[in-house]
Image (cartoon, rainbow, N blue to C red; front, side, top):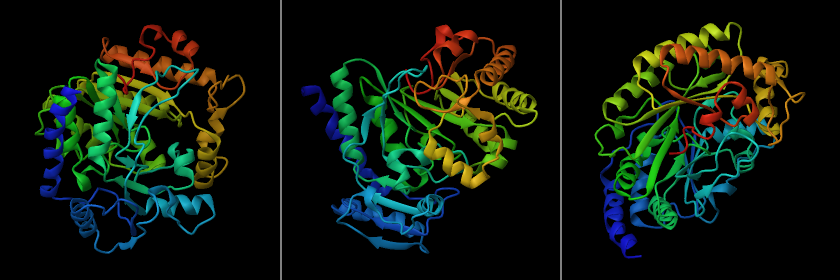
Length: 389
C-alpha cells in the first residue's frame, strides 16, 4: 500500500498537465456529432478538456446527454449498416468505470492478457472490422473517448501491484490505440506512467501514422508500439479510411529511432489474387527498413454479426466471404476462418519469406489453432504475440 501511495501524486500531477495540451484533429476522422454523456463535464478540468476537443471540430453538432452512460447514446437508426456508419461519425465523450479487463481466449494460440480502454471503437473504415460485431460495439457503434483516465491508470496500478511482477497491459483490443491521440494527448500521460511503474508494461496496437506525441518521451523501454499492416492493394479495397502503408512504416522508423521496441501484425491476411507477390513486397519493404521485435500473422477470425455487416458493405459474394469456411475448420472458439489448407499455405509461404529476409525474427500466429501453429513450425512461439511481454 505504501508503494501505491508514492506513485499516485506523480500520476495526478501528470494528468493535470493535460490542460496544457493543444488538441489536434485526428487524421481521417471528421465527426458530425459530439455527444457529452455521464461524467463528461463532472469537473472543471474535464469541462476544459471537452471544450478543447469541441473547438477542433467547430462544424460538429454538440449534444449534452449528461444523464446517460456512454453506451446508451441513441443513433436513431435500426438498420445495422446505417447504425454502423452513423456511429463512426459520432464522437461520444464520457467515462468508463470498468475499463480494465482480462481476455478470455480459449482453444487458440493466444494467451489471455490484460487490456484497458481509454477509447472505444475506432474512427477508421476497415470493411472487415471485427469490432463491428462485438456485443458492446454492435448496439452502440460510436467512437468514444473516456475522460476518467486517472481512474483507469489507478486500476492498472492496483492490478499490476497485485500481480507483483512485470505484466503487459494492452491498448488495442477494443479500439485503435492511437487514432485519437492527436485529439487527447493521452499517450503523453500513459507512456510516462508505465515508464516509472515497477510492474505494468504498455503494449499499443494501431493503424495510425501520427505518433508525434510519443517521440520525445522517456519510455524506458516499458512501452512497445505495434502496427497493423496489409499491402497497399488490400488497404485500397478493404481498409478504405486508414493511413497509407508507407506513412505507417515511416512512423515505425521514427519511433524505432526514439528507442521504442516495434512489433507488427499482418492481420487479417486476405488472399487476393497474387497475394504472394503483394505480401512478399510488403515484407521486403518492412523488414529491410524497420528492425522489428516481433511479427504476428493472422487471417480473418470473426463472428457472425461482424461478417453480416461486412457482407452488407462488400456484397455477399465478396472475396473474403468466398474464402471463409466452417467445413474442416474446427472452429472450437466460435470464430469463422479460412480453410486449414489455405491458412497453412499462407503462413508457410510468409514464414519462408520472413526467414529469408530476417531469419532470427520472432514470429507467432494470432487467434489460430494450436495444431496449425505446430504444423508450420511455430510450436515454440505459441503465445509470443504482440499483446504480451
